[in-house]
Image 1: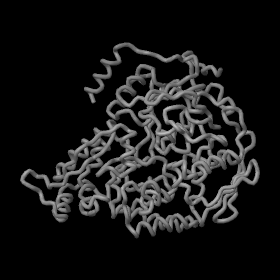
Image 2: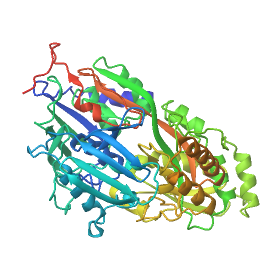
Image 3: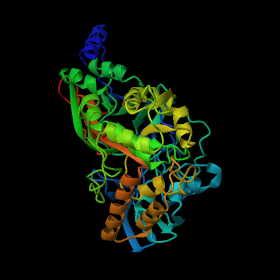
Image 4: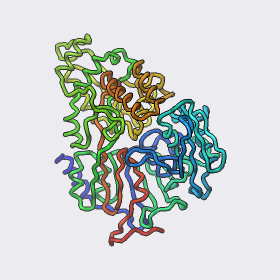
Length: 511
């Protein structure tokens, strides 16, 4: 850490820069461009976090992961298959048009249309019909009792008639959220300006410059120099003490629900062998990674659901670091160690340039038990396409914003392989299918909790994923930003309501 800090000090010594503090603009550094600026298509974390600043949905989640009305003034559930949303009156898109049920209906129909090829279509498969009996009422009907039905109501709404996106390197459609996207240059920056029809505090940010800065060291420098006002969950952990020494900066650290995991490709017969998967799990020293490499900014995970989730059950099989046990399992699987200690097991680990360092850690740990891991690094767009197509042996990703345990269905059910779902590992277990499908259709909360206790135990035993850690939310911000409210899922929505303090101590202008 001392070497990194010394380098940063030397670079920072080139002379501080400051952004214009009189315009009510803040700069937020992010690591990648969104895969889509259209809420009907973006499924990655960056897209989701940007889109919720621009678009409203019928419901949203609160800080505790519970669904609450947003565009919906009230919600009725007259039966196990029907939900009625009564819309607020007077909500306007950023061009002044009033948002009505017609816009909601159009948004959902455009996602469901086969020609759209929206990756979100699979998530709406339980929706039998959506109707708008009048301008302020939306009725959703599911094909059968569907426990997490409110998740169907989380899509960002676009105006009726909005065409399907042709290019993903330009500003997306307008929304009714706190900001409007006015400019976008892929891999450079996104400019958000206030939606003039959305109320906000007088001293709140009037515009946000979302600058794409893939190098976390550069992000750290921009924070230290006053160029960047906010960066969340992407600063190197070794650099945090150096940033904490800057009086102009504040560091916020809160427990998060983002789940980091190691994924296998089950189309590889070697990885279908449970003994090999368990050996890999025993070979990874999670505690050392979290405590040393991550500097304590995470919690060792037992599964996909964090302790904050109502269905969490941590009483499951765990895999502490045990290289001897890993070697025994590999021997049993028919991969004895050669004279050089290697076992003839070679896998390719795909990642992004930003994830290569963690890949090298996994590589070193697996080499200790005789498994060779080669690392292939791709830019995020190419990497994400490869993972979606199942083009990997091993990879490590994270799930962000899991609220309802029905996520297990979309991720582990054997029928949910791409493009029908998110089972990118091609994992298949009839017992898991039965459990996740029962959890999806069981309305009673106590009964669902029992089902998902079994799901979590089976996932820990069968290892479709190696659970690594739940990521803490670590945000570094300029002290002129006041009132940032951290969400467990890493949401940036409170950027819309925080206030700005000008250099003289007063609020920023609200022109």
